Image (cartoon, rainbow, N blue to C red; front, side, top):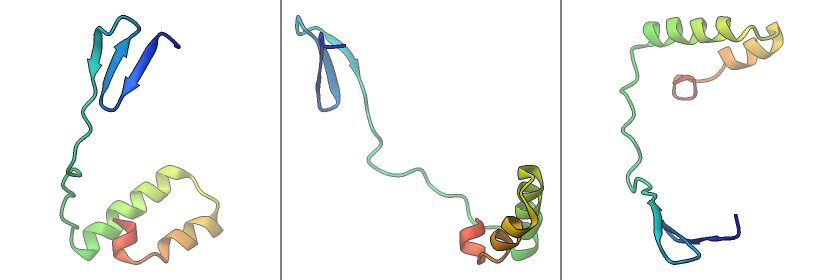
Length: 70
């Protein structure tokens, strides 16, 4: 609400008392290594099946390269 001021990562109420410290990671979380092609295809197919997409949409996604699938 209007009684709270946002100064970068720190938030203060109208009296200047700190409410919380919000830290944003400066380094993105590490990505897991991509599995081999067969395992990637198995996982991707499982996800597509769970999404219950129309066949035309699933076909488009199946055409993605491995990097996009991961």
